[in-house]
Every structure is written in C-alpha cells, then in structure tokens.
Length: 117
Image 1 (cartoon, rainbow, N blue to C red):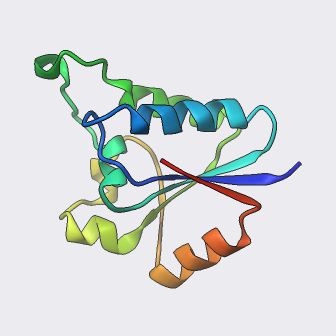
Image 2: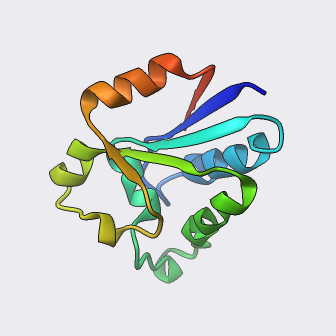
C-alpha cells in the first residue's frame, strides 16, 4: 500500500477546497495509507466552535472526527502556524502532532504522493 499525504492549506468556508480535501482523504484511505497535514490557514479547518449558520453553509469540520475510523491516524500541523495565529492544541477539534519546519519538510519529502487542497 502506498502512502498519500493530504495537505490542507486553505481556510474553511471561503471555498469548497477544504471540504474536497477532507472528502479526498476519506476516500483515499480505502486504498492507501493516508496522513494529513494542516499548513497555514488550513489549521482553521479544525478550529473548535465554528458557526456557519450565518453563512448558509454546512459545517463540515465535524466530519474530521471520523478520520481515525477511516484509519487516518497521522495528523499533523506546522507548529509555527499555531503560534502565528495564537492557537493552542486545545483550540482544535482533533488531536494533531505539531511539527517543526524541518519535520514538515521531511514529511513531505518522504511521502509517496502529496495532494494539496
């Protein structure tokens, strides 16, 4: 089985890109070992307390909670992105492993495939 690294770098709800990335990761997990990396504004995909009612959009962020059920247990973020946005791990809906810049680079370089959303 090959490994696919899904990279979420888009903020939620501004476009459909984030939801498409989540859907691709869930589908891909049926065929490959998948990992997920949140970079930049992508970390907002899993920010707790999102309210999309005023936007007229479905809050798909709750769907990230099923990732472990699909075998996606390697979930990462860039440590500096948390700091730059004043976020703590407790602010997120998922347990993620924060990585240094070098560790992010290593993760991307060693992935079999990288899909960015």
